[in-house]
Amino acid sequence: MALAPAQVLGRRRVRRDPGATGTAALVTGAVLLALLLAASFVSGALTGHDPALTDLTARFRPPSPQHWFGTDQLGRDVFARVLVAAGTDLPLALLGAAVPAVIGIVLGALAGYARGWIGTAVMRLADLIQAFPSYILLIVLVFLLGPGAGSFLVGAAVGAWVTYARLVRGVVLRLRELDYVRAAQAAGLGHTRVLLRHVLPNALPQAVVYAASDIVLALSYLAALSYLGLGIQAPGIEWGQMIADGQPFLRNQWWVSVMPGLAIILVGVAVRLIAGGLERRLQR
Amino acid sequence: MSPLLRITDLVLETGPAAAPVRPVSHVGFEVAHGEAFGLVGESGSGKSLTLRAVIGLLPEGVRQAGGTLELERDGAMRPYRFAEVRGRGIGMVFQEPMTALNPTMRVGDLVTAGPRARYGWSRRAARSRAVDLLAEVGMPDPKAQARMWPHQLSGGLRQRVMIAMALATEPSVLLCDEPTTALDVAVQDQILRLLHRIRTERGLSIVFVTHDLGVVRRLCDRVAVMYAGQVVETGRVEEVFTRPTHPYSAGLLRSMPTQDTPRDRPLAAIPGGQPGAGDRPEGCRFAPRCGHALPACAGLAHVLAAVPGSPSRSACIRVADLGGPPLDREALLSPLPGGTA
Image 1: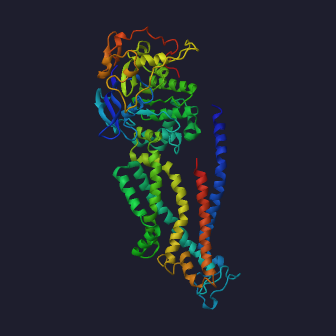
Image 2: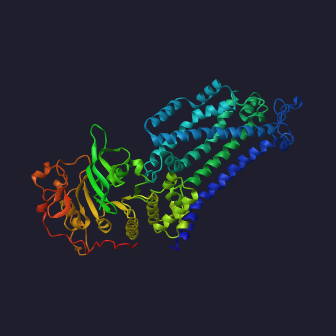
Image 3: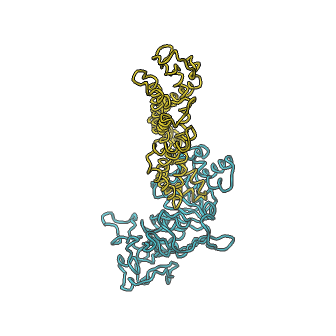
């Protein structure tokens, strides 16, 4: 048995290889998001401009060393506004992905483990919600609830939990027949503990990867709502709202809309890196 | 020896309630204190289902349609509810050590998960108990092993962890579902010795399901031979192995090769195959394959009756006419020496 530790180390080294590229992507994506978020707090110092300060003598200045991203129709610095908006968009996008993920995972795990009428009720509810196009459902809900961050979160959660529930239910249905779940039951553990300690941890990786890529979806939901005037209201600053404000001037003053659009793309790339990295790290 | 576990008339059903199929019909057996009991049969004979029914962990779609399950408590046999015996009176060891350990928990935490939840042990107490248990099942360097993840262990070590997990709940009966089938022969031998030692040291009863007659011979005191969902013969291992009282057990034993079996001659085989749960014949289910069958066998009710001149019980009406010299299995299959591991 003197060989055992060496064997273990050897096996680990082999395993680390595919994980390494995953780690690099994960770190790159996370650093990008962290930098963007940090910049949103110090945007004034970073750009030398107040994102809310209007200056009608400096309307529609193109990108220049003074105004990296130019100025908008009220003479406000677009770079400063793009950075400040990150402080609104990123947390809401993260929450907008996390809230439905948690709800979906809990309901899906219950449906898969308990089955019976609970399972049926959850899955029929999922069918019902999936019958609506997701954007229509979101817009109608937010319209009924009134614009704002809270309505966005509720709207996103109502529509998006379904995918997680289906995903996790499928995995749990398979896991619950496995011997280690039976062994936990044979050891006298209650259903709650079996579900939380022995089933759910093995079902989570797939849901987590999915949630990471859902951040972009949540961001696009938020931007779309703000574009329609149902999202973040002025004086709050948000990328979708900025895109909508700049749209009439797109032909000649493209930077007003395009710069916040680029910010959304940057977040998309960062999130994709995180999701891909997670996927590679979690795959067995 | 006083009984500890008694299964009576166990019936398991599957399929629609209107037209159910019975993979197990009217199976009964009794296990005494400190006894190792073997449940032997081919794949599909219902032995594993029977074992799982004892602790109420039947697979999806199989239900118990009849029978009583009793465990001795305070000197009397009492029917039990599964919640009462799981993690208390009855422990279980599963066949596949690769899939029977939760990959997201460290070995030490896994071993004591049951009693920790039940008795509210502190993490610290549970850890030290886990190390003791791992030492008891012969894990080398149990302290270090307790911090390992299941995927870092070999099949044999995982099976030891499974056994430690079952022992953590201090059961009086250990249900073993082919715990050595997935292991290679050398490791199989170690696990058998381990089970034998634990049983001796703890005075534990063992119900051992296997298709391997050699394993039964080595570990068990008594055995029940299952065929097509029924027990066809039961008795003391040395009796059943030397003087089988059912043509099926006799056939099984004759088909086992020994060191003296000539290499150029094909092994003895029972013609035909075991009928599936859906198409079992009326009367004696073995009759269509049996060389001793009479017309009466096709209308026979299944009864395990005492055999004149033998301590075994058999379902065969032709016991007296089976004849043949006693089989000599002693030479090949010596039982485990007591207390070694």
